[in-house]
Length: 278
Length: 213
Image 1 (cartoon, each protein chain N blue to C red):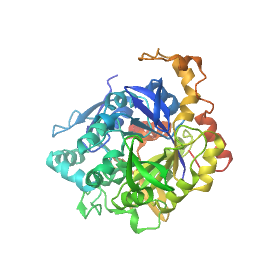
Image 2 (image 1 turned 90 degrees about the vertical axis):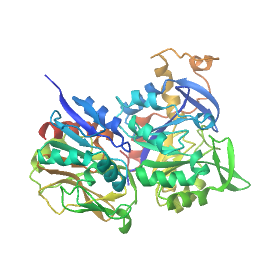
Image 3 (image 1 turned 120 degrees about the vertical axis):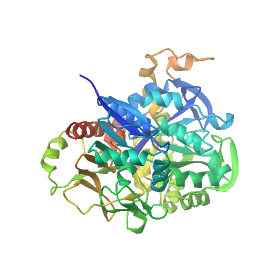
Image 4 (image 1 turned 45 degrees about the vertical axis):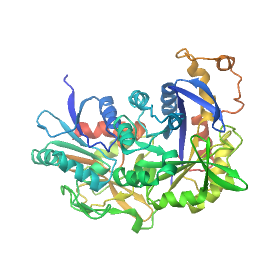
């Protein structure tokens, strides 16, 4: 099967934000500019995640996605604060193609079961944030803020049993570091996962992604920071960032971005390594 | 020149705005159809995908939209079915128990899970192969040159294979299963994949097909 290259755009108060280990969020720009740029660069899909929605029990992506769907003609998945069928329908009617559920899946598995029956397996993806605790991978929720006593691999099996179409597995330790993927995690997960599995967290250089596809059988990769760091400077000029607090780090251009990936170059590299991609 | 008008059937379980945006992009005016109305003003009726077969048929019946689709077929209106919107045009589906479909095309929608496939729920990009036995093959050979590749976005756990070469424009495969990915009969055109989500390729194909429909 063709490996998929996705980007994840984290949203807080209508800005694209990025942090490390799902913490310490910083504004990088306007999500609509990133989405348009990524589409033009031939990204396969985009995931939008409202990173504070679950915490505040709200979902705020609708107006943003409405705007983005005017010009971005690839699959759009939305996540963050989805708790019932009404939330799902609201997103689908407004430009979303698939939804990503995380916290609500842990809190209310019946909701996910029913959602699969209404919208079909292919519409329902579940995000798993995981971290090793005492040598065991555990499931976290609320963007890594809450630890649950659930074994990550048991959880994957459970989700595929109830008919979830896809799992997006985020490594909290690797997320935003650019230091390569947790290969053990992804290898173990792809061994037991019969449904589609996407790996998130750790992409920093071309070789990281190649290694992931070469050593594990994940179906695709989700990349956030490395893409954002490559494009944010050119997108800054489009519109002034109007946000409370210090934004000097944006314009000084030297914050934390010692890794960056261009979508086109990554795809070219993977093709040269005989990885089948679009 | 007055734009052509497309109506998209909405039963609240499909990605209707995505389809609307793509149709607008290729030059249509678009109205979302939530309840039964006269079909006369529409140049094109779209049956969107996403959702389950049973739920879709139930909702269509509840809102009298099934009647609207049937009348459109009788009146020889141009109809575009996408993904599940293609599947419901068949006789029946085994999705969550056997459910009766509209029956415009002959055949049964089946689950991938009984076969040796790469993925039981296929999510991602897949090749389409134009059927050389179909009468539209020559016409499609021309548009293939405009594509950067033959990849389109598929997302489905169910498939259907028509035995009728006259209506199967293209097919695709998942493991051992070969299934129909574009079907055209009379004024009804249907895709198993999502052209509205297939980037530049999808736009080129949709534009080309809808001009000819």
